[in-house]
Image 1 (cartoon, rainbow, N blue to C red):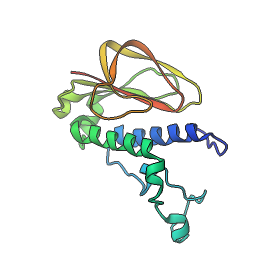
Image 2 (cartoon, rainbow, N blue to C red; image 1 turned 90 degrees about the horizontal axis):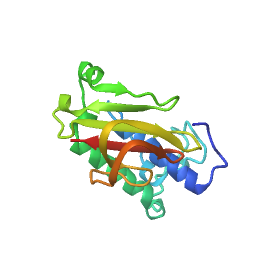
Image 3 (cartoon, rainbow, N blue to C red; image 1 turned 90 degrees about the vertical axis):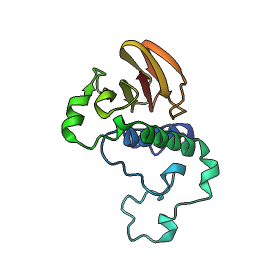
Length: 177
């Protein structure tokens, strides 16, 4: 997605959640920047290593204001910890277990969880980094949603079959046992 300095608070929150979701559902070692769980700001300074505490402070008081982002990130961490399919360390295993779906310019993929000994045999992940809704076609079968535009974790949030629409700046994680 392009930089959106004039984006609404709602859009910025969605972007924050999507950014955390991409990091925590991608394979490899995730890196979460300090304070990102509550939409930490560096006041536009993208290289703040020497900017001092005023710019680099985590802004701990923001946690309550951004409880939705905190909770979403916490749920993504719970998902990643509970499912070894998101933590494969062997690149050969990753290559054999990830299958990219046809989602236009957006990214969607399935993970063969069995390769990592996961209790979920197949996991579907899709990202929408656009300011418009995105319709995605899931592989055949019934899928249990565990991450949607506002909630993340391991608990079922509903089921989907066939096609579904992702809101702007959102993601979907669904599983089949």
